Amino acid sequence: MKMYILLKASVPDAFAPVIAAHASLACYKKYEDDTDMQQWMQGVFKKVVCRVNDKEFENAKAETKHVVLTEAALDHQEVCIAFCPREAYSKQFQFFPMWKPTAI
Image (cartoon, rainbow, N blue to C red):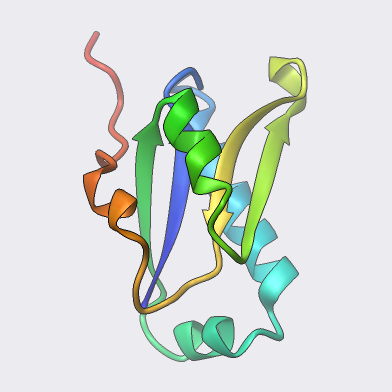
């Protein structure tokens, strides 16, 4: 099982680690009584953080059991979406690139 955290590509790198941390916690708090979340917490609680464009972000919202985060410092824009852990995700998730800092 794993939790996917999708960060919009427009999020500045300096914000990304804190936003991802907040997303993980917000997702846990929202779904802490969910059986998938409880099972995930009994293991090594894997997380995958990906960078997505606006269209991918919007399409991902169609998936169930997620939480969307906004960032006050970025004019309260939606910046991240975290998904309650599960065994399998829809096919689109396998094409999302892992998040990494942009090259300087």
